[in-house]
Image (tube, rainbow, N blue to C red; front, side, top):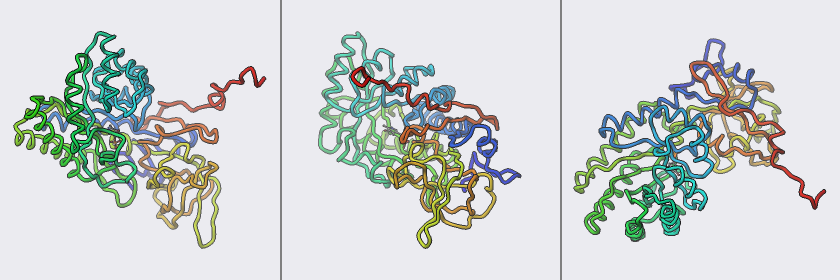
Length: 441
Ligand SMILES: *Cc1c(COP(=O)(O)O)cnc(C)c1O
């Protein structure tokens, strides 16, 4: 079990997170329930920020990739940690602005930003837009001309680095809907195109080589390719990019076999990448660029757990044992999407040794509705509280109302105290937008 930085087992044998007893949390707030430890989130933000302050003279900014977990409170927390955010939709932008997040520290991404999203970003003074197509450049130039502003932009490129991660969450191969390839000349073409635009200030490049990556070498290789390309643009077109955004993708611990990094390890991880940027910038005769990184999963992933109550238990003799919980793919679709691995713990009997291997099933009408497959647990009984660990990223943000199940609420824990940051939904919420048109009446 992961006991680093946030999780422990108390004298009652209960799992605790951020000093709060998870069995008490389940009693007070009900299940299913997402729980996030504020301290872990803050420590991660500051670990990354400190690496840039200490090893790069503060010449950069950490952007929290808020698609990992987006709600008003999280933007407040990361703003207090003096880092920026990236958003990938009008909805994330709206939430960040509503939280009072400083617009100049918001970066906007997306391979198909809608005209309305681009206008919204420009009108609200979003710091930087990471453009990903020629059409977007034209659309953005027109919007900025009408608004009488000049928008800072970066161009998303594809460095062609193969990161050792799950195929479906690898985005920087040449066959990707994201970015412009460095290798085939398209990144150069769009650079020249963007530089002609009067209302766009082209500042540099962005890449994101994938997600759940543990090899520092992948990031160093990406940095090297990006700086080599920047040097080429400088020598061929006298364009020296001042900003380099290396994206996110740092891996986290989910289950046995994953590396276990402490908060401090992530700081060192970034320092390794910074050292590479400095070395290569010197080698290529470039000014050290303003450095951006965009961790999402690693900031919130291990900060969160999901609590469920065990319901039906079904043993198929000689095949498998299913332990069903009161959640499922509506609160965590990641197993259904890509067989994601998780670790589960009986929160009310956390000190007991595992005695069997079971699969945790959800309550949705889909046989693929599994929360985690083949986990070792003590013999679970109906009524036990089950905690699935490392669910802070891409769980709540990917949740749905499938089967008209309610998206669970989220509570934030601070020093043992807990309160809602996302309230429970009601059945009323489910029908709020339903209407009966005249012709059905
Ligand atoms: C998803 C994404 C991130 C964050 O990735 P993590 O693996 O959560 O760190 C950062 N930048 C971009 C452009 C992304 O699409």
